[in-house]
Every structure is written in C-alpha cells, then in structure tokens.
Length: 207
Ligand code: GTP
Ligand code: MG
Image (cartoon, rainbow, N blue to C red):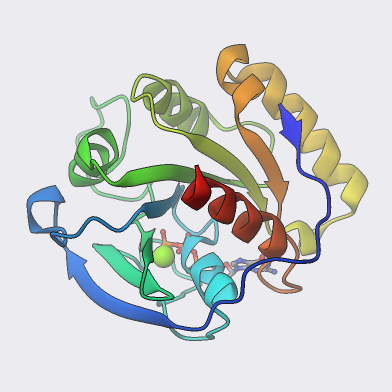
C-alpha cells in the first residue's frame, strides 16, 4: 500500500471532450491514447469523479438512481489521453448464478483493452467491505492491470471513519495487490482527491 502525499501542483486539464459511447470492446474507439477507466458498484460516484477531474459539471451523466451509466463512455483529455466511465456493477440484471455480477462487456474491456493503463476502483468510504467489491477485486487481480483504489464520498463522514474503512478494506484484499496499488480518498462534492488522481495519471503517462 502506498498513501499518496498531498501534492498541490498537478497538470492542468485544458480540454475534456466526450467522444463516444460503446456497447463493448469491439465498438470502443480505435485509438492509441493511454486510457484510465473508472469502475465500482453502481452509484459509488464514477461519473461524478469524471466531472470533478475534468472541471465540468455535466460532462458525464450523474444520477441518484443506480444504473445511470449503461455504456462505456470515452472522454478525451487534453487531446492526448482518455478517461472511461464504465457502467457500475451490482445493478446490471444478470443471472444470479454469476458470481461476479457485472456487465460482461465491462469485464471484456478491462481484460483485453490494450491501451488501458490503469483502472481506478471506486469504493464507498462509508461501507464495510462489500462482497461484491471483494469479488471484483479478486477478479481484477487476475487481469494484471494496474489498479488504484479510490474511497469516495468522504465528505459524508469524518476522516477518522474513512480511515477505519480503508484499514478494514486493506485487511480483506489480496496483500500483493494492496502493496502495489495507490489508495486515494475523494469527494466529488468538495473536490478532495482530485490532485492525487491527476498526479497518478501524470505519473502513468510518463512511465
Ligand atoms: P452508475 O452510473 O449508476 O453506476 O453510478 P455512478 O457510480 O456513476 O455514480 P454517480 O456519479 O452518478 O453518483 C451517484 C450519486 O452519488 C449522485 O447523486 C451523486 O451526486 C452522488 N455523489 C457522487 N459522488 C459524491 C461525493 O463525493 N459526495 C457526495 N456527497 N455525493 C456524491
Ligand atoms: Mg455513472
């Protein structure tokens, strides 16, 4: 585990443009931009985070009703790299027998997208570790893609509570993944975590 320090200087976002929605990997844009995708259970705040990072209130569609984002949505940032807003898991109507209740096309995209550089896995900072998140994390560990964990909605509780959630969570995920994955606390409401996320993206773009 690595706790990122508060760093104030980060790259500017000069342009953030919604480019297209895709149903699956085959329909995804045919470009080589480094991509950074946001995943997590439905309603955790993925679309809100895209808006916070891009400094635009309504770039990605946000809703209090879970299941708002249904397609893979691609945004080009500064004309050079991309953010991808993914449908949440835990909402899609799939067979109960499927252990990992998330969109098959999302899994296919994460497992096979060649220009995907990192997946930001969003976790609700108010909740004890949920089976659905832990199942997903075990699955993504097998994908050999870089991950960062972002604990969202931190404005809704005390920093102490958020730290307790993070500690319990780390104890329950595979140690090898915890050791190499940055952990960031965020709030799309008060914009905390924005600098840390952009710093990490900037780092990935250089490496
Ligand atoms: P799906 O597309 O349905 O999977 O959801 P999502 O993960 O994209 O969540 P979305 O960004 O649409 O946010 C869901 C709800 O949570 C909305 O009502 C947001 O306003 C709210 N929300 C998101 N992030 C935050 C946050 O950091 N703080 C607070 N207080 N509310 C948030
Ligand atoms: Mg969404």
